[in-house]
Length: 227
Image (cartoon, rainbow, N blue to C red; front, side, top):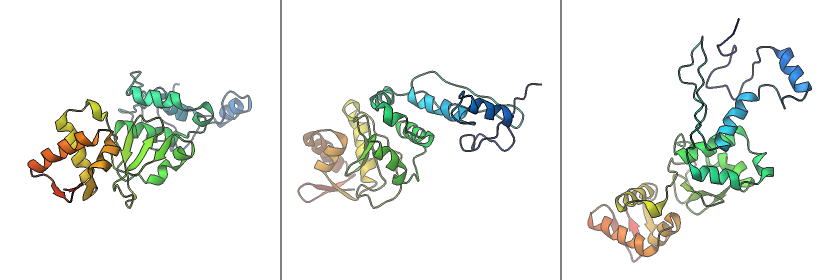
């Protein structure tokens, strides 16, 4: 008989955290023979390899109590993520945990970041994959920046704002991105915005002046703007 359901106690939500081999004896023999590093590791490796190759995470949609449906998509999601993974030294790559991999994926996809504590990035900072900035965090290879909820670092939550290529954005989109930054900070200078976005201060000032004309923000002082 072929068993197609998940093992007892295992769900799609806890599949990475709990192990329940169908045959403990066989699993232990595989481990003793060196065929696996540890029992119950297979699904973690599937998730990790998906992120390493910048591909979607395994999809268990349609799985129920009687049937397991697993879909694996081979399409590359983000070439920047693939570039980041390839830039990581092998010794650090081997130290990245499954949780780290999923965190990297979520940042690049810009989802599931609400409520994530900045401490979650500490291990990636130790591995020199992520570094802190005045406005939040960025990947060490410059692939992407992402903000904490408050630009001054007082908030403990992380906002789902994985940034895009500012140079390629339409002006209307740049305005939306800048307003997203204002939503986390009442006042900010044009130089701070330039440092975060990578745009010149001249281009930032032009956008800010248009936002002032639109009545969306007001200028307070010589260089500081407020929403």
